[in-house]
Length: 89
Image (cartoon, rainbow, N blue to C red; front, side, top):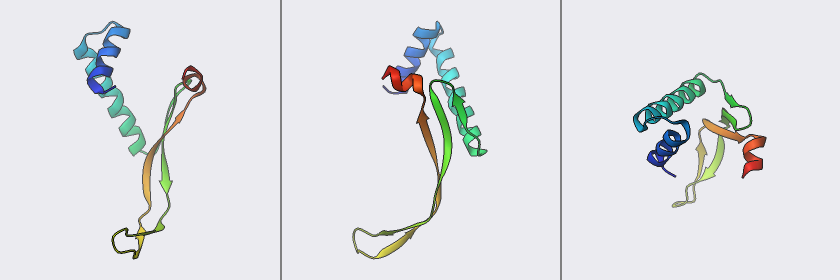
């Protein structure tokens, strides 16, 4: 399912126009992004939790040359599935 198909599904399930559903989805995405940027998490009980995880610096290898390189530490978005969603799938 892509974004436009998701907007269609939201519109149908919530009784909204496609334009309203699109704005609602964009608002949700922006709210999650802003919250994760601030270092907080977003918990939707039964659905799951969006959070930020820190990946430490580590060693790796350049596949072309075989030389050892250092891969920088990074913050990455993460999603942990809630029980209701897990049971539904």
